[in-house]
Amino acid sequence: AQKITQTQPGMFVQEKEAVTLDCTYDTSDQSYGLFWYKQPSSGEMIFLIYQGSYDEQNATEGRYSLNFQKARKSANLVISASQLGDSAMYFCAMRETKGTYKYIFGTGTRLKVLA
Amino acid sequence: DSGVTQTPKHLITATGQRVTLRCSPRSGDLSVYWYQQSLDQGLQFLIQYYNGEERAKGNILERFSAQQFPDLHSELNLSSLELGDSALYFCASNSGGTGFTDTQYFGPGTRLTVL
Image (cartoon, rainbow over all chains, first blue to last red; front, top):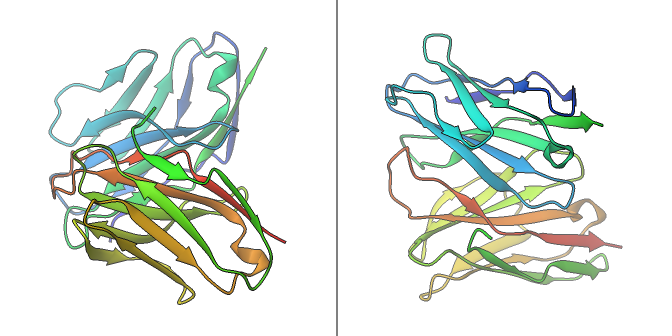
């Protein structure tokens, strides 16, 4: 069965610094997609970035990028130049590619940006 | 704005009562997912519908039920409410395709408080 692991329950980063949030996954499939979502204290779930298993380059979206290491089965989210508004919960997710095609979520990492 | 709408935004009710949460997916999306997020917890998948048909079931209690209507909006019915049902309930949608690239977009959530 597919699984997502986020081992950092909480992280601190200084404003304007870069931070890496870890995500490892387990799948026997060759084709898969990985997603990152942000959940600020207001509660909504915001889609940030997507990485496909066949993508040759790491995904980037503004200050967000993915450090995708397929052999290690990791898809770490890198936030550059952290801002106070980046303080939130971050979830890594993968979509099942067989059966029900539902999404598997990690337990999340709570990031606090310090002024 | 993800394009997924949920009503109501907040709901306060008493134990033993029944409530209905409503969701409209993004324009063009055929699939709707329901999730429950209790305080400081991860996302718990409840149920998925695709074009009016149930596609996948997660850890949904028997007291809970859902359906997707011909216009593709969905409703989640929660009955015989207990204190432990207090949570943030999310609806999410995607195209419903089986590709691993299909991104899921979330609504703003309904915060249910059971007193």
